[in-house]
Length: 119
Image (tube, one colour):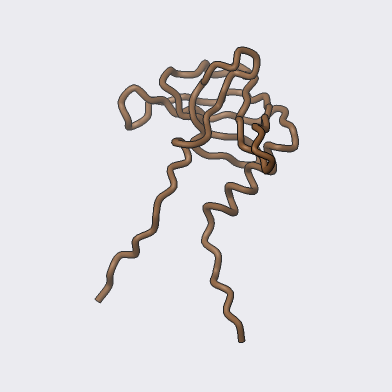
């Protein structure tokens, strides 16, 4: 008899807010991330063909906030299935080292890893 596994789902947009780097105003939430770009979920549509200066704030190991600053170009924007939400795709223009570290950490965190067994 097959039983569906119960795996806790981690909703990334609930955690990683994206801010305008210059005004510190929230722009939206990180939907997904890759080495080349990201998807942003926002309550307002983003301007296609425009460059944005953005920031993600993450807690550091010392309890202090670390800023991941980057510039990104909006390639597309469409209404989400959720009412009053928009998904926008961005291509990365420039980023500090923290962007690649965040992308790798999230890929590792949300991946399945085989259990280590001792022989």
